[in-house]
Length: 386
Ligand SMILES: Cc1ncc(COP(=O)(O)O)c(C=O)c1O
Image (tube, rainbow, N blue to C red; front, top):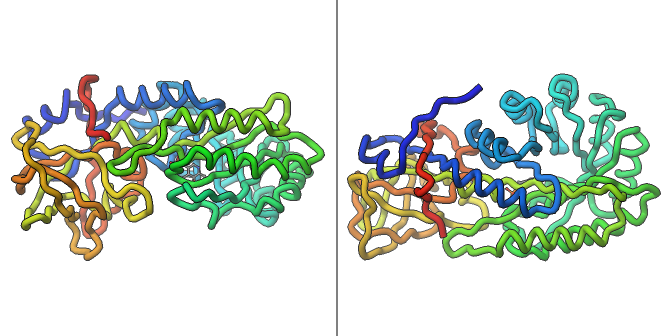
């Protein structure tokens, strides 16, 4: 299965050949390839791409072509999507809540072997649907660090002191027991991984067996304007050094679940300015579209550049409030955005680094929805970045 996508040399080429009235999402294959190569080359273990960050089939295919063969999925449709594109890839069903019957279907029809629980009651339910002798079940530990912009430990994860019993119960079921945590999203301090890994120690020391797989989750951040984060290398070192001190099996492996770090840099959103009212711009995408994640703590804007008649628009800048197109009163982007002072309706803005948690969560609220995804072919073209 391969989707045929419109191709343009660069964004200027697109804008000179047409004036798109709907938002256009631009995929930069060379950036996806480079990003995947860098992460795979640096992360000290197995890389599972978190499909939720961007489940566009074209993006999945680019990551696969570069060597990403393991996928962190949260639902049967995500598993089916990955399986359709690459049946040989390994799909992990890494969420403690599943629709009834989904785990059974995933194992029987898609060969899924990796599952996750965070409570004994969830384990009991899971064991009704899967064959434990063919399964690896991760016990998810709740862990939080102040440097995580999004605290993912509130909804999922067992308290560390419940982990020994949960892990032992998984082992008693006949499945392989493994340990997972997810410290958060946009984790701005690599120490968060050292801390979280150190929290697993007490549970691991209480076990009568050694576990083989330790999943340290996602959260590897990217930089945005006024939100500059450390190099990924520092995160990789923190994981490597601290895992080395744990009592794990001799053939132990670390797993990571990057979403944003792989998905963000290779996509930009090209939008039209619909209306200017003094220092307020109204554009054809907004908080119900690809900018939805700006509702969550972390960065409040994206790197951006402006175009007029297919060429870059430059000049003295002033800062603007940016509004989406819907009639909802909350459809305003949170941060003010510096742009050329004479920007006007009919100009275009290109927002870079927008490939994560953008198209995967856009809605058709109020009838505004674009599914126009194009490929930018020139390796010399780079989306806006910080
Ligand atoms: C369990 C789990 N793994 C991985 C991720 C991916 O996180 P990120 O995109 O911050 O790397 C998330 C994000 O919510 C998650 O909840």
